Length: 344
Image 1 (cartoon, rainbow, N blue to C red):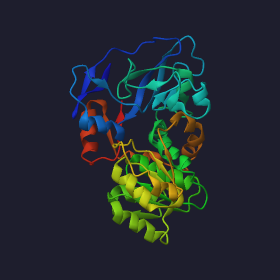
Image 2: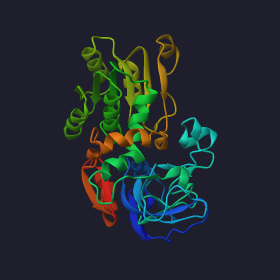
Image 3: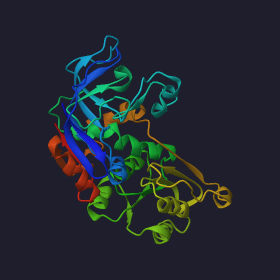
Image 4: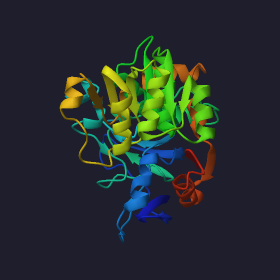
């Protein structure tokens, strides 16, 4: 099969890889219909050391089951299924607590001999716990929105949930990437009255307004935090979803949140130390967030997509074929594309 493999910073190639086969009775082989490039894929795209072996890329995909292992009972050949961005058994103690990312039998695509999602097919371990059958056909116009449940919509929702967003809240979302925009959807869905989106790309913030953002702040850093405080009567917002992952955005979150407020970090931190000393404690600020257990949220969010209540698939602003995947990476790295959809 053909698949996207990263060989180093800026070096993504479409190469031939062995066709996936059943290794364990809990496996399934899925023929990919849609995949995409994630913002987190851009971190290794900018910094990965060169390697001769390469790393299969992609962790967001949906497709059709081609084959199942002997122990798989929940899906069968011909089913259209969605895969969350990590595989899991959905039965262990961590999964039962909603921590599917920490599943005792789970793992990540593209590692430990498991295929990446940006290829023609994928061997999915723990298929019964991982794969979710979709109640639409492969030609449905809802597929891009359903694909967001594999990561970005579930991650944005995780930020709003861990921040404790509820009816009447004021929320700041830092970052106008796909996760930040999905966090806007999630915050409004959970009843937030005011959602301030911090971002500088007009096409993205306009989409954020369509998703429910009540205000847009283009300023960054101290200036941006001051603007948020101005919008909220001087106190700041009650909840912050930080969807970037830099030290500056953490500082901004701490400056913009009100005393007693909560900050949820979704962006993979690109720093090791932060301002979490006495000033944070004295203000009773809660710092939370983490890797989304996307599998935990699929059944909750899917009905709203099927009903057309939310349309997170609008974050995909350009489609590429698998052969064009290297171009998709570069387009996202250059900020010419918000989120690249890969069609197979």
